[in-house]
Length: 334
Image (cartoon, rainbow, N blue to C red; front, side):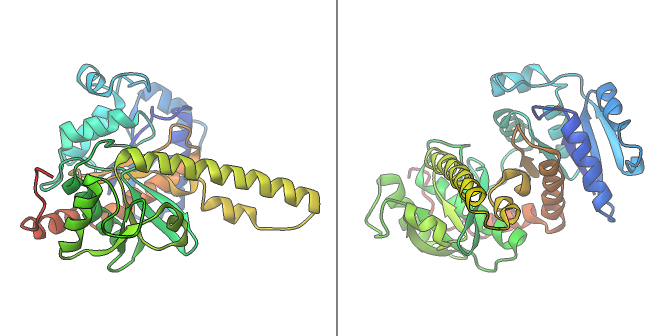
């Protein structure tokens, strides 16, 4: 298995990507290989810092350009065809690699994936998923920012994709799917959410449990939480800020009282570094989007997630479910 890693994506590229890739491969004993995509000279300079790097499982694919965070994604992927993002996605499309990871411009990764890989049949707008901790474990929230305006049938697609991801990646059979809403009653919500609830309730092969209120998210009521990208992103950013606030308060209180608590274990469940990255679901290939501020640990974990996604045949399973439900009610006019 070969995984392409955008070596120029993060805020501290390529140092972070190289260290993360080396660490990931040293941890693995399987056939996973990492292709570092970016400026060959800079990547080689970083690799020289790691004499124990398994060079037989590390490759470099040169890319002379970098898409910066402030650039227009649509314009950048057209003008910078030799950028690390475009080169990496094209390698995935050509079958030269099995997955692509980038901690670079989220918009550019999404745009390149849509234009080059294209969405799988039955998916209009691929969503980005995010793992959030709950009282009983974790939940996949989607969309968390890729699509701020959605139609009802697109929310249904998010639910299907999320259900496959949670089943394949987390080993949860028949995952519970909830629709984020202002009340649990079926008649609550705006027109889009009302129609989405109606469609989800009629959809076969999906364990839809109904509406989920904001206060129920952390309780672990559902395994997949569906929302449009606007609401999902606001929820995620609030979740992150509260986690940081509570963490700071805990540290101060414990320092004053001298009490002991396994804070490292607690923060691993809240920190994006421990998660690795967010999957872009619904495109013809495994694509993982990392945080720009990712440390090497996040890159290592993103490589693990990408490898698992390929090994567990996540994309073929998504295609199969979308095809199975192709005749289910999902009016395009919704």
